[in-house]
Image (cartoon, rainbow, N blue to C red; front, side, top):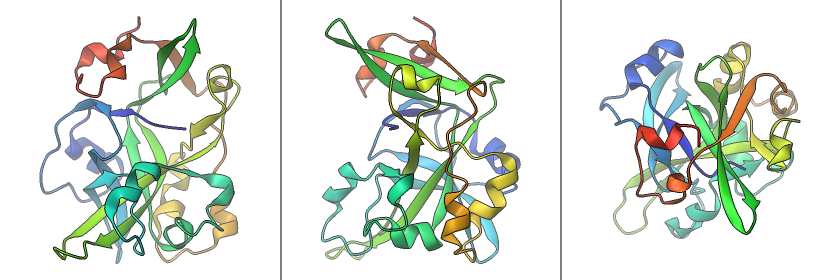
Length: 222
């Protein structure tokens, strides 16, 4: 799964990386991004690719209220095409969630030890995501939200967890983001674990366990 991640780079840098329109407002760097927080995502609509701030935790268009989002921060790759919550977004509303790193936990001696996972070369991760727009029934506000797609863990991560987010390579970004591409069988083929040597992981201090902690000391090796 993926329950916390970091976004440290300026959105202008992300825009250049993904050949996208920059976000209207700069988001502050965050080292402990949690569900219900806003995060920068890459979306493509009407031939225009852009960086936008969406809320983490997908709210399906048919939801009665936004409370469902707390259970929708991850989507299993194996059931995207059949899930009532994610099927429509998988067909038409895919996004990329840039992340500098993400966290995972392992229980050790009765305590939860956090680990940080990132690319070995330090480049950002392009996590596969889905997004949705939901109209608040009382205010009429449109809330745009997203979820991160997960798959089975590779050999590296399987030592601490059985799931991991899908990391897309640059060669797959156009295919994944294209809203006109509804070939779900082809898209499902992209949802594979990362190569065993692509990522590195190391333990970090339990500071990350508290969502109120948010500074560069969270990503330092323990």
